[in-house]
Amino acid sequence: MLGVTKKNRAPRMVSRRLRTVFAIAALAIAVAGCSRDKINYFEADVATLYSKAREFMAAGQYRFAAVTFDEVERQHPYSLWARQATLMAAYNHYLSNDYDTAILSAQRFLALHPGNEHAAYAYYIIASCFYEQIADVARDQMLTEQALRAFSELVRRYPDSEYATDARLKIGLAEDHLAGKEMTVGRFYMNAQEYLAAVNRFQVVVNDYETTSHVPEALHRLVENYISMGIVNEATKAAAVLGHNYPQSEWYRHSFELLSDQGLLPNGD
Image (tube, rainbow, N blue to C red; front, top):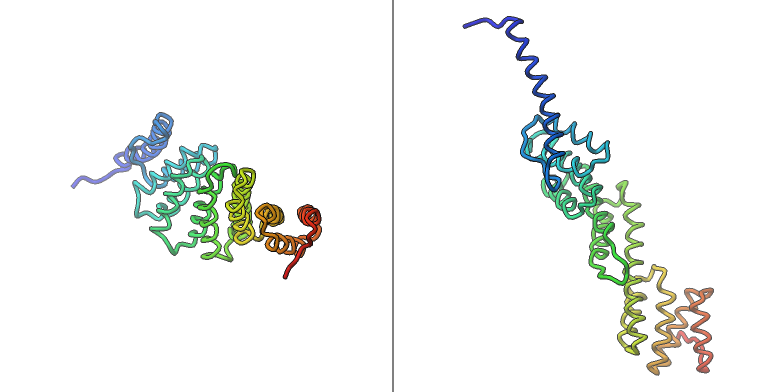
């Protein structure tokens, strides 16, 4: 068997270094030349892929970072880097506003690693993706409801996590948004003189979103609609609740004046 001399070893060492350099360069070219942000098939060692993904992320090229992190998990699924790469891919898809893919990546992470120490962050990414897509109250609020459920699930599972405080804040904002939607629909029915339908919407705000900023107006609108329907007793009760909880509110002043014009007073009995 032939011995291996330093002269024989040198080309192999250079070859390894060159392969690493060529791998990084080829990966950059593959990403830059890809269509729809999908990397052309290219094999590289896990360290090269992960390092390049971090470079893309640091440069603000989040789409390229995301698909490169995806390649880490695809090409090296059993490596120590794959688990973190899956979560980093989800985060970078989120940063690039590719919310659907970010949700799928985070859900994949949770399915593969449900007890992982970073599971709370995966839930936070999912909830944030829904939250970022919340539309004006005049439009459908399905995404608002999904954001509310996702943040609530995060708080339920990880009440002491570093993401729980922000999640609770956004739960309140999402509830306020949903209450605003109910108010918009309620006012529409009220203007159309569909008083019973309007009452149902305002009752949802009072009963289901009682901590939101819309409750005082909702109670006042109940007073207005009950009077329009001739249900005086319910009108005075609604005004009494409004006066008890929000005595300094302009909405209570409006309700009090409206009842006074009818020769009535708020009545909590």
